[in-house]
Length: 233
Ligand SMILES: [Zn+2]
Image 1 (cartoon, rainbow, N blue to C red):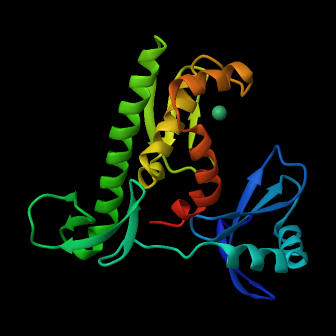
Image 2 (image 1 turned 45 degrees about the vertical axis):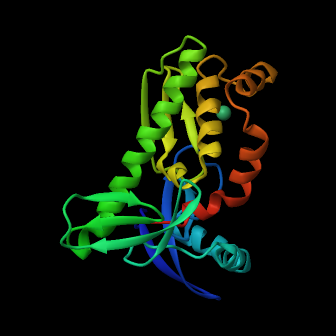
């Protein structure tokens, strides 16, 4: 029996957006919240059907409601909304007739073109800025230890700010462009250190210390403020 990808399920606390995921590796039905859009993601092992997922949702309805209520308020890309950029609030300003596409001007981010394209154009601008900045930081740090990342990309990940694959490819969450630069510096150092050490052992952390002075400030910042970045866009 198969399930739809997503649907609205009537839980005791109200209609709730649910995304169904099939997993051949999962051994039991499980729930998690995707903070990006406030969806409840239900993972079903191969043998479990939608009914098993709904049953788990029903018994955890209060947990789901509490977790959703605890999410920071969502910020949508629209004229007049405020989004963080490099750790500081910036107001989105729609300039329909201006030349160019999108740019940062003081404490504003200006976006041109038709209103319906504003979210896409702003997202593209932020992703490009994220790649430019994180790439420069990662390349500079890798050069310090005589390494060159195979590839550097940005993604939209739910739970990880960066990753480093065994082949030397590094990926960052584009959302880091909204974080202060010291946080970007730390995440770049963290992933570059994985080019040498794939674990999180003492030698890894000693190398991170060599590559950035910001670990002590950035780790708690991401733990406390990171979820806000997931609620934007
Ligand atoms: Zn790591």
